[in-house]
Image 1 (cartoon, rainbow, N blue to C red):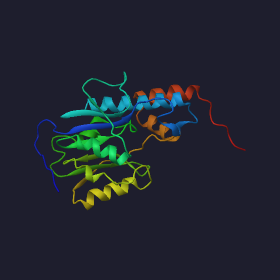
Image 2 (cartoon, rainbow, N blue to C red):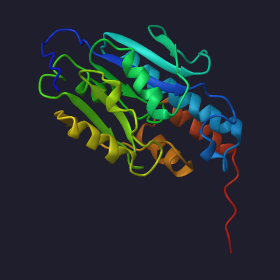
Image 3 (cartoon, rainbow, N blue to C red):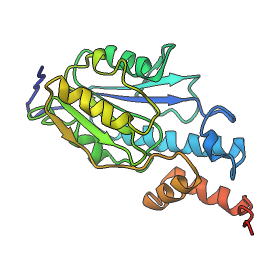
Length: 226
């Protein structure tokens, strides 16, 4: 199964961002504690805003936000918004790809340190000349990016999600399908407070880092156990 597009002109790739509306109690619950639900939601909103800004600055045929919830003032111009379907995460990811007619690269809202240059490696005009898929592993055992030259939903359905072996299972699914897979650098997802600290330090000029700095200035340090 191959899907070369080649060429040297404008990117033909659709950039997909899958995300939740950043509402207290619904997002980043593993950040509570030390942060309050409202604080965790503000970090989620900042991460989403940084991610969308990067996607907006990356050449693409389409930019699509696949959203659980309603768009807010954090949504920049130039995005289509489609609702996530019901079902498990693998089904929701599969449906996102099913809405694409050509090459597509999907990322989440948990890696605000991503850059346009990094995304362009897997979505630019020559991204599909050598590879049929792109895979970005995450430090927690999942993945932060998945690109498909031919966006076949069957490549995602049934992959176990949100477990330590998710990334390995998804990568093996691609390889078993006979795809030539290009690898992106491993990135850290923002899951817990330590992740938030390290990601903020890795991208100190973003909204996420600013929100983290503001919150940590007002959030009491965890009590030391004796």
